[in-house]
Length: 169
Image (cartoon, rainbow, N blue to C red; front, side, top):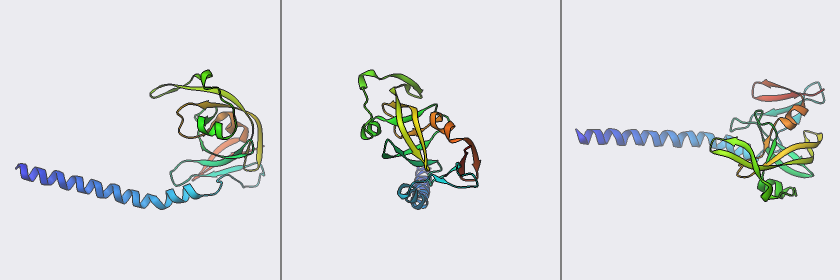
């Protein structure tokens, strides 16, 4: 009986491993395409102020922007109040940060997130330039977030299949 139970358990583990491997193999082309793609944001539609962003292979909306003259990649986060930068990205972009001034600025699943508010002089997205954008630099943040302090300036957001479209004025 114990031998049968051990064989059953080994079979289940083998099937689980094979399923995970197959899932990862199928996802590789989409992930490689998403990682190597050019800027995702593009103007389209009848209104020249519409901004269209296509969902990438990870199922999320990322775009490349130009921050103070330097390229930067962002995850669109409609639930974030502000644009958020990682400490490393802010430093790379030449934004001065006083780490001693970091205060609790966000509530995360593991407790308070520490950071400092900043103002980004200019951000370009899909040919549109935005000036004086409120932002925050957060210690421990894994990726830059494009939050509402800029998204609301892009226009009214609509979902169309795998596209997020901002209808400008």
